[in-house]
Length: 185
Image 1 (cartoon, rainbow, N blue to C red):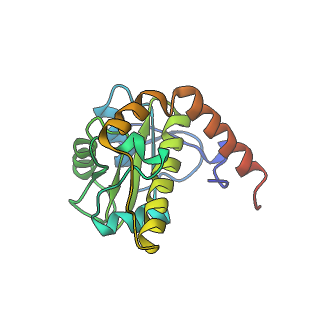
Image 2: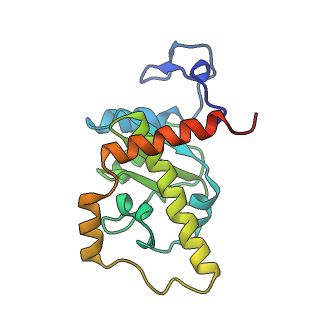
């Protein structure tokens, strides 16, 4: 994420036409366009091929509430888009992905990566960071022979009410921006 700068951000129309900016439009713009069409509450989406999320998606295991990071995705499990692991390069696939996500905060795409959404950019980015970290924690627990314990369904409901408020998501996003601005390069 440290390579993303304002100069690299472009504004595109729903059909992929570049409206502002001089960057290259990615072939998978259909992911973002479909989600923005399908969800009135969504103004930002993130698609990434993050290592932990991609590896975890391949396991076809339920995401467990091993940490607070998993909570935004458990209703009762993280959604998986399994129609294809190939590029989402058509409007039809973008719409199918949006339908699969429904009202969830994100989904895993086995063989490909993940997509997250938010009411704003900080929320969508933090959802991506949280989902990847939740996957990484579960992969680490599995590598150590577990997991053996995780939050109960009732505890997940309690956590959902108090964790990851807009203020917490904004603070996490601000940290990521600071960390990216002082990181390599």
